[in-house]
Image (cartoon, rainbow, N blue to C red):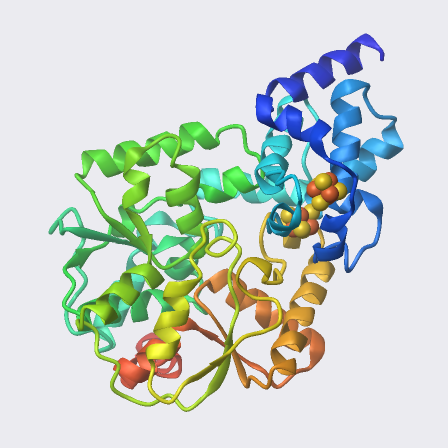
Length: 420
Ligand code: SF4
Ligand code: SF4
C-alpha cells in the first residue's frame, strides 16, 4: 500500500471500535444477509449486501482498495437504508447498521466524501436547525394554528411560559411539513383528551440531530451535547416524541451521552399506557381491516413491537392482520439511512414491495406510527398503482377518540385559516 493510502486506512480503522474491527473478521460469508436485504432485492450486486460491504471494508482497512472497488464499496455503503435486517438474520450477530453509520463517519474523517445530496441536507440541518430550511421562529406555529382553527381543547403552552412534567417534542417534519402537521395536532389533542399536562418548546425546539448520526456527520456528538444542555437548562425530565426518527435520535443515539435518554418515550408507548390506565377512552368504531408496518427505528432498532399493536387491537371495530414479514423481520420501506437522497428509485421499489405484501393479506389499509414511513409507503402506492390506503397510527386513534380532528378536517380548517 502507498503511504497515502496506508494513512487513510489507518484513519478509517482508527474511528471504528475494537468490536467493529473484530466484526470485520467475524463475517463467515454465509450470505444469509443477502437473502433478507431489501436493497439487494432491487440491486443484486455483491457490494450492496452486508457480506459484500464487510468484505470490501475489511480489505480497505487492511490493504486499501483499487479505485473501482472503492467506488463499489461507497455505493453499497450509501445505497443502504440502515434498516438493520442484516443484523437480525446474521448468525454471528454483526451489528451492521451501527457499523455502517460509524464507517460513514470514518470515511468522511479520512477525506472520502459522502454523496453530495446527503452533504447538502446535513448543511441545511446545521444552518437552519431543520431539514426543510424553514425559519426557526415558525416551528411552533402548528400549535397556534390548531388552536385558532378550533382543533384543540386548550392552547398548547410554551415551555418557557409554562413548564410541565412532560415535554412534547414534535420534531422537524410534524412542525414544518404541511402534509404531516396533522401528526403534531393530533398528538396534542390526544394528550389533552387523556388529561396529560404537557408543553412544547416552540421556536426553541431544535432538530434532534439524528440525521447527522445516520449520515456519519463528524459534528453529531457536539450537536447532541448542545441539545442535552438545553434540556438540562430547562429542567426537562420527560420527553414524548411522535416521530420515530426523533425517538431513535433522542433515545438511542443520545444514550451514550445522556442518562436522560432513558426518559424519552415514543408516543405509542405513552398512549398504550394511557389506554391501559383508562385515561384515554376509545369510543367510536373504526371498521377497517388494517396491517401494521413496523418502522425500523422503533422495531428492529428499539424492540417497540407490542405497544402499537395493542393500541390498534384496542380500537373497536378495527381488525389487525399481520404481513408475512413483521416485527423483527419487517421489510423496510426504504426511507432510512439517507438512501432516498442517493437513489429514490430504489426507495420507491422497496415501498412498492411492502404495499404488495399488505395487499396479499387482505388489508385495505397499512398503518404506521412513523411519518417518514407514512410518506415512503405513499410512494409505494404510486409505484404499484395500488388502492391501498396508508394511515398514520394517530389517525386511527383520532377516529376512535375524537373524529372531529381527522386529517381531512385538519387540512380543511388550516386551508380555511389561510384564506380568511
Ligand atoms: S449473515 Fe452475517 S456472517 Fe453471514 S455473510 Fe452476512 S454479515 Fe457475514
Ligand atoms: S442495513 Fe438493511 S439495507 Fe443495509 S445492508 Fe443491511 S439489510 Fe441491506
